[in-house]
Each structure stands twice: as structure tokens, then as C-alpha cells.
Image (cartoon, rainbow, N blue to C red):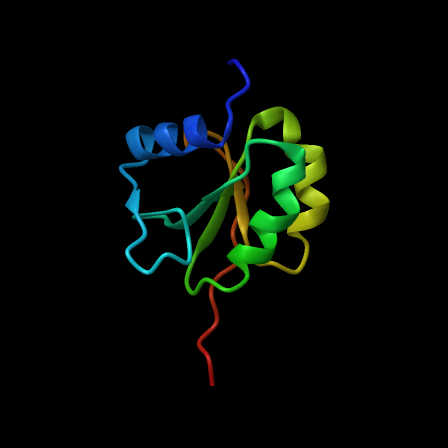
Length: 100
């Protein structure tokens, strides 16, 4: 699979995961799996994981498969999962906790 930029990742998620734009604006997309933020380049990942921490529920960062090594270390503590454009799960998202 060819490397995708941010817009192509979002288009693939819209098609493959039946995702729609997030009406709240906190995430890029929402799907049945949860909120999704795209990071097409390694430089976008830090910001993507920072943004996803502010989203409630299940949360995912969609990346190119070859960026897994860079994304995995950034995902620690975010409770976010990592998925590919075809919807494959590379790292499971943690179960969201209820706020007290």
C-alpha cells in the first residue's frame, strides 16, 4: 500500500470504517469504533496524540503502517489505539473510564 497523507487517511477512514466528520470538532472523524484523528506524517503524530487525549470514549489515531514504531511510543498514556487506513488495529484502545 502506498504511503498516504493526512487527507488520504481521512478519506480511507470515511470509506473503510463508515466514519463521519466529528460534529464537536475535537476529533477529525467519528465512527462506530470511536473518535479518529489522522497523522499522515511522523511530524503530525505528537500533535495527534495530544489532541486525542482530550476526546472522550474510545479513541484512535489512524497512521500509515510503516509509522507504527514512531507512533507506539507517543501513544503511551493516551489510552488511544492505533489503526491503519483499512481499519486494521495495530494497537488496541484502552477502555474509556467514567469521569467521577
